Image (cartoon, rainbow, N blue to C red):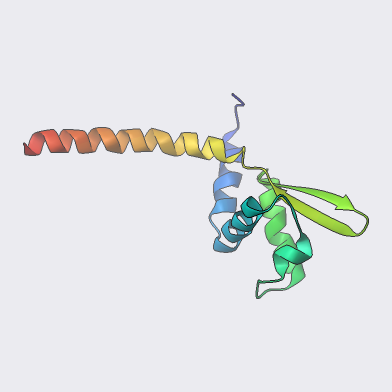
Length: 107
């Protein structure tokens, strides 16, 4: 298992905190790769604004970019989400145990 720093976890959650970035990731999960123009087409924002969102996702390690000629393609890399999931699982276990105790108390 790869160990990530807290800074990396902050970048992952920060990237996932924005609705537009989550939408970009959802679109990338449905396709192997999309160009920046294809990603920007349905959004009501400028291409530079979309690029800033992609920068945040790339900084968190969630998007990989490749350039062929003048076309920049983006692809999802969901591996960093595993760390976020592991962090959330600890709290899911906490709540499951607390709800089990509450159920036992109510019986």
